[in-house]
Amino acid sequence: MLFQILFATFIGIIFGTFTGLIPGIHVNLIGTFLVTLSLSILSKIDPIYLVVFISSMAISHTFIDFIPSIFLGCPDTDTELSILPGHELLKKGQGYEAIILTAYGSLAAIFILISISYPSILIISKIYNCIKFLIPYLLIIISIILISIEKNKISALIVFLLTGFLGWCVLNIQIKEPLLPLLTGLFGSSMLIMSIQKKTQIPKQETKTKLKTKLFKPLLGALIASPLCSFLPGLGSGQAAIIGNQISKTDRKGFLVLLGATNTLVMGFSFISLYIISKTRTGAAAAIKEIIGIPKTNLLVLILFTIFITGIISFFLTITLAKFFSKKIEKINYTILSLITLILLINVILIFSKFIGLLVLIISTLTGIYCISLNVRRTNMMGCLLIPTILWYLF
Image (tube, rainbow, N blue to C red):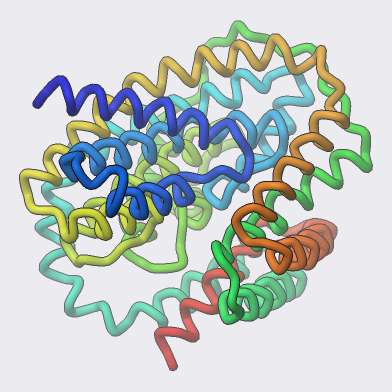
């Protein structure tokens, strides 16, 4: 059985690398396919191995997905904040260092997750029933905090409300995978189009770096903020990173460490939240619930073991891939690469969300470009999920 578990783990890492590197192909899509296939083609496979596969894929994705985010400016919702500090370092020839910083944050998050999983289970299980009716109000308070820390609060509020209205509309129409065109437009294609327009040139990248950033502050911020965001719907690692940075202020490079840590912690805690409160906060956790229901204690222990093995392997894999892309990126026409990526995203959306998905992509892309032009944090565009979630809980 151990061999099968390790085999499922390694296959999950391969798929997680694929979803992390290819813009538009997310863990959620693979999870959806897996749930469907588990009822037919994969019905003879022990569900435990499918759970191991999903856990491994999800965690490895949190390491790898910073590579396209920083090198291409094409993130998913968990890495959108890495664009600004990551691109600044990329333009200075330090893109490799930017990715290494996120990788160290993610690796540290693995050890943090394992260390505090048991205390978290005890604490959350005792207080969740007492505070669950406060969820919409907590989301409102967090939204106000995220807007209030902006220099241009009016613009931040406009972005939050505009994307919130867009998200509410998209989530209330008949469309497959509604979040795919919505989030791709707001955070991916909008950035790609702006890169094409500016004809961004990437300088030669330095692949030898020494980690001089202090890790304590960013990891402390991630430790405090990630569990909170993991148990509240509509919040992700982007919001956890902003909150964590307010709790424990750090510099630009430290913020990349914080992003890596929150990205992995939020994913890891989503499995714990499924175990404790039977709620799914990520697509990976939702897929596990569909396949095996609410995991028992022994299965949660197996998931944590899988996360530990996956995290260590993914760390070294990320470093290897980052070095490879750092050496190749300067030789590639960045404008053409951005255009190819944009075409790939359009095709992925047409396949999964059909023509109506393409319309959503166009509208969300134009919205994203407008929001970016207002010069506020892109995390405010997560109003597209927060506002519908708040309205759902209130009404």
